[in-house]
Length: 157
Image (cartoon, rainbow, N blue to C red; front, side, top):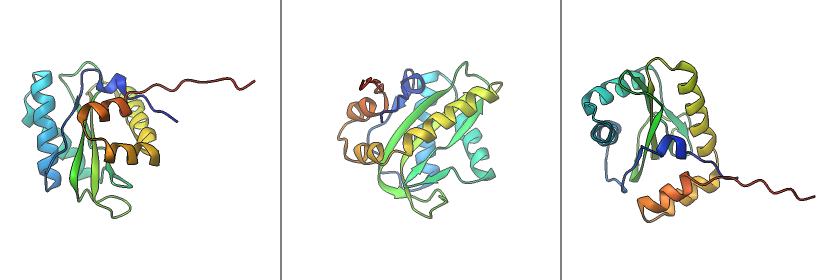
């Protein structure tokens, strides 16, 4: 089953495989990249994400982390993805280090949109096939293709 995250990645980013060796380092890389792309101070993004991280783990298991925060300067939810060479500790619920990181930012005033986007990302990364494919994809473009494909329903009747 395909999951389409293109609405979150239309203006978002997929970074090249990263050698970040800590949670803060990977969050900083994603925040800086998004900040640059959105013309927002990356430090403001990092501070908001770290504040959310202090509330509880965003490591959802199976090597996936979905750090997220609300940012006043945004008009719509946006995402950024990076695969790490080696997983880092996100205090995941299964104790496993995380190597697939999807940062989600949403407007400060959009509680419902933020939750819908978070649920959409979470559903996509529940797919073992998607996780495996992302781990073997050799380029950011190949990862984008995996994250932005659309399901086509076929009536078998």
